[in-house]
Image 1: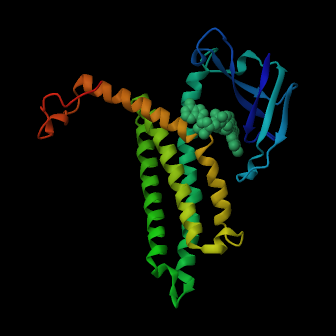
Image 2: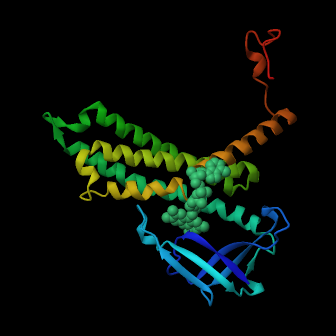
Image 3: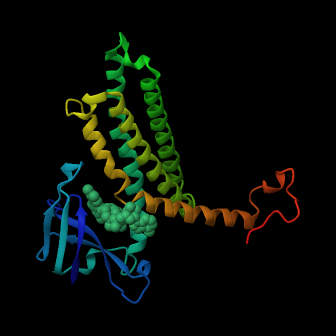
Length: 264
Ligand SMILES: Cc1cc2nc3c(=O)[nH]c(=O)nc-3n(C[C@H](O)[C@H](O)[C@H](O)COP(=O)(O)OP(=O)(O)OC[C@H]3O[C@@H](n4cnc5c(N)ncnc54)[C@H](O)[C@@H]3O)c2cc1C
């Protein structure tokens, strides 16, 4: 019997079935006591609430409530108490997909802003001639290209099935970097369009609202930073112990200075 609730479920108002993670072993540590279930919209499953969202309004985001829902054993995914493994696997396409689709949302904002600033005139010339404008377009183009490059690099690491810890770090830094960069792209795109960019005459304001979610959902960017830091220190320690990389520390002219390297 499944009992509990989960807020903010995209598709929650209309989906026929749900992927649900639930505690199945209260004695075990959380990552060893969670199971993943496929739960049909069946007796005991209700969608309670449709949120008024800032953006991304087409998703039918709802609060799901489960009250004594019977779930057949064949609907267990990945084995009892092994939901954490399913979750880790699912977060690869989920977080990398969020990064990739964020680029897809930011690109048209920049295209609209580029076209607008090339046409709009102030003081007798297109506003693109002012560096205050064109440098923001340049910054946005750079962030978009860097975002694309990082998504491709991480996708290659996933495809090659590189070390899972390294992949986890790359996924997390890609999700954080790309979503924040694309929010900057939308910000610059609106800024260079002045007042009209803030209206629904152009699609940039909607893109701006939609993109705001990307740094919050599927794990906030603060949680992404925590994962990056955790894996980075682990990798650095492993590399140091295995002496895989050349130690750059003695390169300093006074590397042997007596009494200067104080750590406590
Ligand atoms: C529109 C929308 C759609 C969504 N769709 C889905 C969906 O389909 N399925 C689904 O399962 N979820 C979905 N979510 C949920 C979303 O993933 C969560 O809202 C998000 O992960 C943050 O969790 P929270 O809201 O509980 O915030 P909290 O965990 O309460 O976080 C609040 C703040 O505290 C910070 N914080 C919390 N813990 C830490 C920590 N350990 N270290 C540093 N900072 C921390 C966070 O970064 C954040 O800034 C959706 C949310 C929204 C708004």
